[in-house]
Image 1 (cartoon, protein in one colour):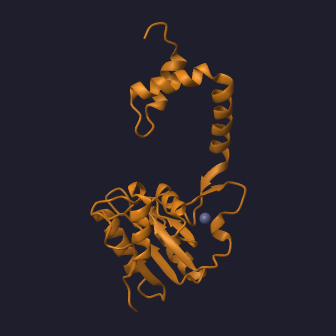
Image 2: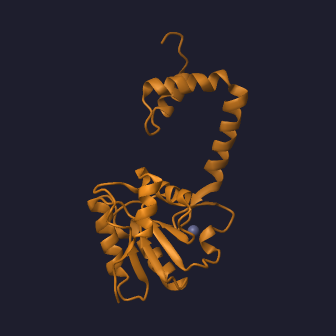
Image 3: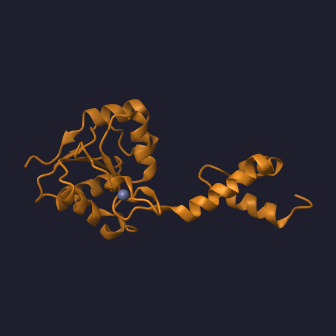
Length: 199
Ligand SMILES: [Zn+2]
């Protein structure tokens, strides 16, 4: 590109870091932005500033919250159920199906070489189960080795509590990540979830 400005280079560079976007799409998006400064760049800059300043992860449930406001996890959880997911995108797809009316707990990943138990909000999950008198925990981790290892680990650390623990139905394709399941598959996996602790 000739006559290129550093600002544009930098913009393209940043946009190309988004998931699914390469340099070519990044350039198209940058162009769209620059050609629509009032309609796109201005509100985007404003909302990015607000997100940077106000949006934080709740230390208890892992969901996003406004820095100055209490998290949704503090509201009364009437169903006494918590659905445990790996990340926020997983929660969003489950919410979209409308099948679950309880609270969520976002682990922030799976147990693997990079994530230890205390980095995954597992200690706070144990606290929530005890303090919120949770009756049922639905483990909606992915059907990957890491997802299932994490589910098994959680089941194990909670074995001395009375909480009923269920797991999404085995119909989930092996290796599938929750985020990429279609609504129908997710819906039936939820409906047919099986109890994994019988105490
Ligand atoms: Zn929270």
